[in-house]
Length: 589
Image (tube, rainbow, N blue to C red):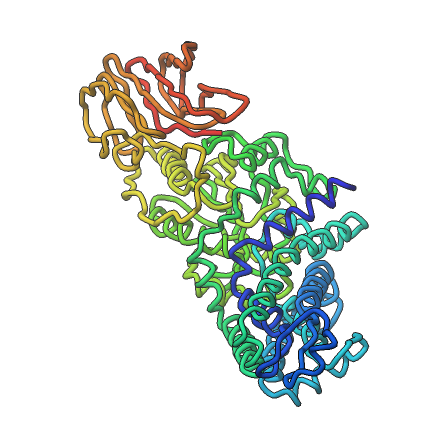
């Protein structure tokens, strides 16, 4: 139980500092913070308590009293967001109303509240239903709570593992005491950073005289910002802002989700084959991005509607046998998904003629994402052309025991899952796997060049990033551009951090380097573990910290663990490869 509370608090804190909350911060700062500063008559001085002398002054001294508005705004937001996330879908399913009605009511309420800030008489009308909230003096505290309730209805944060677990549990009716406890802890965790931001706004306003003297102007400005947020949310302007900012909390969410922590704590994980579960666990912990045998792909089932297919006809994995298929779990308002889809769509366009197919399994995170027309409009904005399966009942989501948005399952021509990728990043690695499977399915296929879509995923600043060993993507080569063709390489001397050098003779290709005479790789790295993706028949010999280990290699490319440490440290590694072996990349853990 304590662990569940801790997970919820940490997950909420991560969400509260994620880029997805940026659109609401101006409202929190102005309406929840700056507007809470008491007005100050010209010439008056604020103190904590009036003195006898002060009462005799021509300009009365205004006693200092902190407004509760920042607390009420954040309390209202956390309360309504928690309730709508956990119970919204279930309640709306039981009522004859559209699934996105809460969002539209929230947007309309934001406009009304903004108008109320601009026109005080109108705000008093809006506050009447909340007159039960006690106030020590005439102010705007009740309006703050109403504003918070409204923001919670339209607040769409990034879907980390905790929020994903709460959303799925609520939508599928699997609500127990643990789920409610997790939701409360998550709401509190999310509220903390927002409250700090609101209090910062109040602090700034109370220290800058212009804010206190011109409170009327601040209220009008806050009203304009609130109405602006409603308009931006209505026309999805906030999506463009959020997409432009990489999710700097992604690594924290992956650490929290490692091993399916949240699903196990809630008891909501479903049973899948041992091989698929192993691949999912590796993906969650970012152990490697390589081809594996993850077992037969579960069927796509429970789909309420298909988009981007002839007459809405369903698509089955059985009908796609002989093709390479990428199953992409996503939600249209998920900013992480939107950034990833630019890569998925580029792959679909580039490789469809070579036998590659994509199926976007849209599993809703919020109630309004159950509405097919909303999904259709969202897909059109993103330019998605491939088939989309609306998994509103989470049937396919459960069949794969998926826990994340986005998540990709790469399936080969025989219907076997060969790779699982969770979250954003390493798109070049996934594309390399797609190309390998297409070539395996049809040896005579002619593939186009690799796609050129910028990867904006933030990297772990400490750990060495994945290092590709080919002429096209070897950005970490110590001497700059790695030349293609068969060449002899001399020792590069001391290596800069996180780079590699070659010695001996190598045949440098577009996707790998093939060892010739006296071929070796020297690598400088910072990591716990180092893996080499290598194929062919022969022997690799790795030397690190004076210790040498040999490995026999045979068959298709596979991952070999060359360094397995207990803590992250900077070191150097020398790997010798026998002639004929092909090395593709180093990955790190």
